Length: 500
Image (tube, rainbow, N blue to C red; front, side):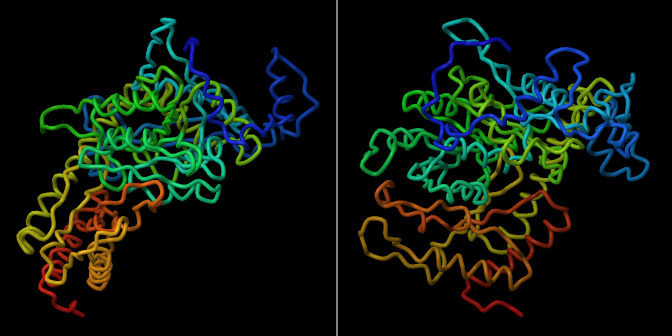
């Protein structure tokens, strides 16, 4: 990708990122690549002849065009057609990344072959835009990570410092939201609806910011597809509006998108049209996109990547070279072979993704059919499920206003809850546990509000009447779980004690 006239965004760097210097040993290591046949007496890299591995094989599902790969792999058992990927010790005609190369030390960016593989994947689905001033493609670089958690945490360290405020959806995946709190960063929750983040609330929050409260927020963290926990997906129109606001208010967008490839069609017969990412229309270099193989291959792989401008890439590499170091070679070898000419290739990977989307859409539809039968008919009017267009979660509203002990106070004090929603939901959660069902209550995802920052005429404590439910598990688990939920809701709203 060629260079473009990007906006100077260096002022977004944290004090830690500005203070970090390149690892001097890594800089010298790079000199071994200056020309062919360089002799190195500098680095303590064990020679490949001492690796006790002659080859590594991965047996993966076949993605032959004549079959439905996910359905076949899931149902055919040991007889399912497969393909063997081989990484040999020495270079060979059937190997893209040999063992002797893959298991050496490398830089924080990751192995060049693995970088090239995920870069090609990103380019295929997020074609870089052309800069309006130069006519050049906007340059982007991949930095390999230990999955989304590692990626987002590093981005927060590169961008955040004590006293900063970051922006995010008012209900946000708590594990990652907590990653920057020890750095002294506080969250500013933004209102969301069924379509995700509301652009007008973002604009209002930024326009009305009083800098006596601290530095104006400069980072927006967002999960645009199948948002966790609400399952909402931003339309392309909202994305463009949010990006324009990011330009207006000088925001960095951290686009965490693990469910991008799990977008569903609006009809049974059509392949879904994937909504363009923020990265695909970022001409400034202000979007840092986070991708992962966790939801589309296996969560325990712990391999993902950040796509960013070269400027931020350099600072991510400096941080990685002095902290976690590059991701594990085995995952990088696997991805390189899988996406390479001897593996699935990008086209085969696309067939796997298409089949995987269809499988998750089938599970979603099965879940919603079960919900109608086991919850709505058993406890009519007491719970309303969302219908996610991506991801693996159903954001389910509990209609607490129908509970006999639901109360609305007459208080008008700003920021003070007006209902007993929080207490009733805690009780319902315990009732579900007593019945043998674990769900995720909305309270664990609610970002804390700062009365000095947020408009609290409608406190989030009064809007916690949701459970996050998943259709990622087995059909048996869905069946049993929704049976318990329907029964528990009926007893709870009748104000009956839970059955032993």
